[in-house]
Length: 286
Image (cartoon, rainbow, N blue to C red; front, side, top):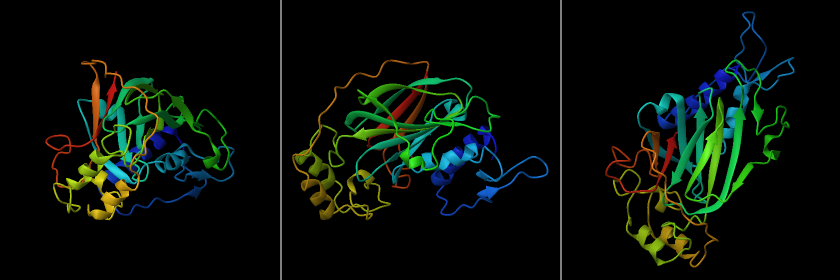
């Protein structure tokens, strides 16, 4: 766990653990010292100035993910080079992408989030190094961040719309959160009104595992779409936020594409991107 290579591997491993539905995983151990062979398997290293291994920073980045995992597919060969895990925060409607750039080059891409009305603000946290053999990484540009990483301010970008361009640094793990207008603005038009209530009502009595179940409309997260969910939307009638304008996604036919559908991974759809309605975000890697 002593190198940046191990951090990229761990970030991907945690994503696969979630994707594959593991309920328990164990790693030995958290605090360790260098072995006789020169290796180390801990996240913290005793008796070293580099007491936080690169893999240590993977956990605070993953902790920023939402509570609703979103299914994703990778077209062509973008997967081995750049992996994207997407999630939604049920209490806010925000969408978080965890992006792992395993290449030695910055990867500029276009991110499109459909069905989520962005407030115009983007919060980013990054762990990054210069080489796969690096024993240290920078966290949001700081080579020696404070012990309490919760005090580290996010890298904020304003003027974000549903479609925007972002450059993911070489050899990095990036947590990128698109802030939604309102969790109850289910149609993404900027306010909470009767259309949002009708979206929930259309899934009335659908339960987790049913083909008609959509996690966006199960606002209380109890696995059943019912009157409580409708009341949660109605309680915010008329609320919204200041909106930013949309712009069209540029035509990039030569790019790799990563698509993410905002649906449960096990909601009765064999393929969340084919034949299933729902919000999607797309990352096009140029």
